[in-house]
Image (tube, rainbow, N blue to C red; front, side, top):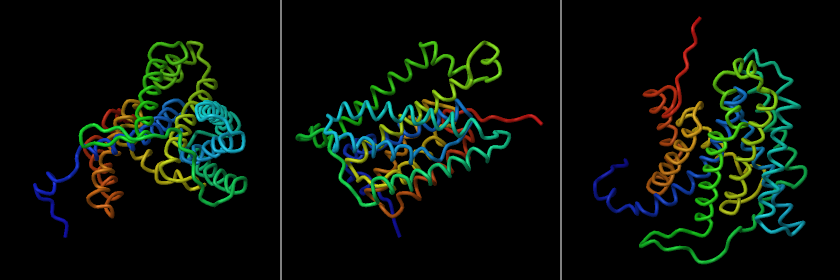
Length: 300
């Protein structure tokens, strides 16, 4: 039986666990941000976010190994590929599906995830590969806390992307149009906003966020077609905790889940997933719309 005593809590390396949790949570947050962005723009809950990220990461791997491109160049090109890939999925597949019921597009995204798994295995094989490290060098020391070069890069990339995206949605005409579509699709359309264009852009940007996660987590773990399974599941959980209607909520949910993952994984590894999802249930019981989301009620 597990008993938590004050001594156990005091003895935990809280600083290190917090840093590790924030790094992991940043990756959850990026993927969750993409899931929420797609949902807010198109009202489609995608279960293919992990597989589109995995497929894009294999594209990055090809650019790095076969074409010997610098990591920064491969990173940008892969984000562009993922953006176009996501927009094509929306235009070619999602747009042609009846959205009169919630299940239709959801089932299709599940099918897409299975198709991408098979396609990646067919093209690149199922063996586990090592993804090239984007940065090398000694870690940073902040007292007793050690921050690896990769974790520092994860913090930097997440901060830059979140700042750029929030500025984009706040100040740019396209970002404001996307927010308008998310708030009221009919009103936005009457104001001259192209719903189809915003839907494709939402899918493209959301897919690109997942690709960033894939490229940053592959050096930590490994590269194979199933690499994003656990990450995508935790990211979806983070999106639900933060609120599927809130982009800041996706970030908060991702960071919170990362910290819980780090602490519980250090102390009780076998309960890592159990406690993480128990947190989801607790949050949704108290706040059905998530921490920062809105609980929408429909009048019949």
